[in-house]
Image (cartoon, rainbow over the protein chains, first blue to last red):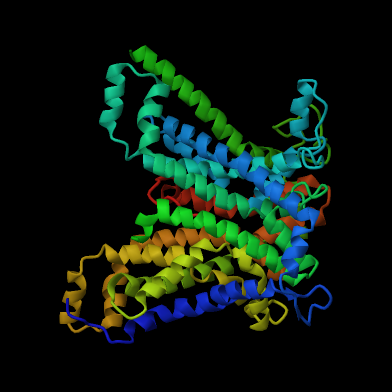
Length: 290
Length: 282
């Protein structure tokens, strides 16, 4: 094809997006790294060079280990459920039965509703004299401090994340299930294979890439949790629900310790980028035509 | 065989009904609480789903005490601005990446791809410092405040790649014909190509809207004035205002959910068809 555009045309087209990304992405990105080597702990208006001090401080702070542990618990508790349960639901919904659209709408609803409203709704379920403790009392179990007991608080918050994510991943699985050849299922039916055998031998091997995709994206979003914590527990009680992003937020915007917060942000950056890199290189190549 | 199938379907329905009910139960319980009058103990054991002392008084009360309409308008302004800018900037940037050869194309491509890997949460502090430096905050003026809410989300790699894919799928003959007819490159883009990628623009608009509408972290960092609150920030603020008045908190939360609920139900095919997998969520 003949060249119908001037030399500068491609750059002109890219310019507006480029300016925005430069100002609100690339500059802040490098500034995060620079700030992480600076010391703001004494005077917010005057930074001194800190070298690795912020990182050393972080490694000596017991709260850091608590935060990392919480994030780890979040991953271990939320990701497997978000990988397996939505797949199970998608398989059920993929049958030709009545009312599928209604089921999909209802199960997807939590995805669409603001996380703030969702967190408030759960806070109400978790209230001391709330409906969940009533259910426990029916079974003669003593009431639980769902959000006030350091033993349980993080799991209560994780439940909200899971509840809000199920519909999202279910739809992703449904799209993948459509690509499984029908003949394979028919062959299973002729062989008299049961539900479990059928899906273990046909469905799961076929949609393995999607399972892996859901694993990485649910892990990445588990590491970015903020709103649930902010609305329900503010990281408490006793730091038991403090996650990386909430910790960064607290250090940056409440304690105004910009250097420490940035060093923490770099740690988040490294972890999330590692997951994303795997994700893009292994599972989303097609999306970007790599 | 048929009876066996009916039995199997019964099980499927039982499971799906249970999950559907669990999905909406937190909202149902909130709705129920919001409709209970002062004469009814909202902590009563056993709990009652259908209010005994049925009233809309909590809705009237919260509507008069909190400027939910203002929050709604603010959210609309921010979402509309974010959507509009995303449509324009993403399609502008997606076009040369799909169709043109130029020096630095690979660099541009991978720089944009790199932004996907970096979570906003990790760079939010410098983003805030930049926004302050540019005076894009509500303490300067409302307009600047809105610009500050919008700009960090004015374009996304997701949008650029979505539009790039859309342009890639258009046959080249379309452009050739237009150029022979005497169009320049901008006319080709505006008059010929853009109308052809409308479906992708619609997808981008819908998912950008949902993302912007639900955004909570950024507005809670930059906003200082209550009159500038978006719905999520305003609703979270209800907790502080009515510390233990759960009837009001519930009523306010339900009101704030109505717009997005209507939006979702009228656009549901975009969300649940599975064709746009991975589109929502940042």
